[in-house]
Image 1 (spheres, rainbow, N blue to C red):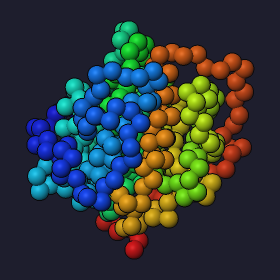
Image 2 (image 1 turned 135 degrees about the vertical axis):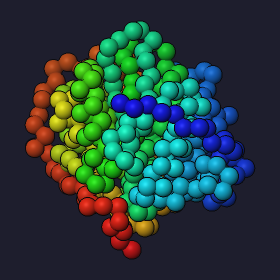
Image 3 (image 1 turned 90 degrees about the horizontal axis):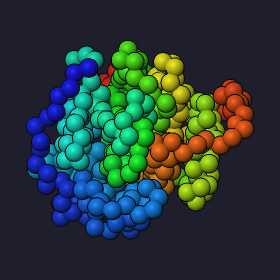
Image 4 (image 1 turned 45 degrees about the horizontal axis):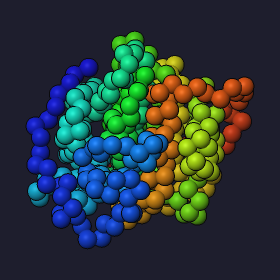
Length: 343
């Protein structure tokens, strides 16, 4: 695996004064003084309370070309070579400012995943991976999948502050998912070749649309204890979000499942009918994302991964139910990024 950290870009995109006036993030549920890229000095009880809507709105705005990542530099879309490289630069700068050592996993020309590792407070050879694909079709890709990329970046921002972690964490952004899970397949195989002991993989894909406002999440193909663990954390952390289980594949969790890792995908109700009407269209823009829903889903993921990293025990008497007993809906793949999204 090749590791390279880009030269830092100017950090002016973090200043609220450069924001587009149309950006109106929700009132912060955590520390209202948090700014993008600046971690809190203390975290209230329950790590999910450190998830910051204002910071997430800024991350999402940069991924979707609303907020500049440097003076006069926007990410126009994430399907071209240029757009995806600018996305990697944004991730690299932000993660470096957070104190991470960025690893660039180049698997072919003009194609690379980005990942960082957060080592446990207690030395461990175990890992948990949280990831999302950073590419889109030739559009802003706000829901698909700037929403997931934002959630992973926020998780990487706040979980650094969780004390007592007993399991290492990996945060990853996959390239070329739209072409058939290409980046995540390469990374999953690479990590398997390295012999990395990954206890669970949490992939986030399209977590930005909530037409009926119920904040319901789908957990697709949750292996092992993951379905019961998410339900447990949802209750013990008093988040109380509606959770549905599905058998939907064709996202990056499949790449890791195929390598023998327990995995799942977290999304909006893609299978159960409350999913974005802007799927793979040019209209998939920043304004179409439900930020309150994105924040709520990120809180559940942060709480769950946090508890897993602390080795909070799973529920007892779990019954393993086959995935094929649940409904599914497959996502679209494309032969190349040159296939423009529908009008």
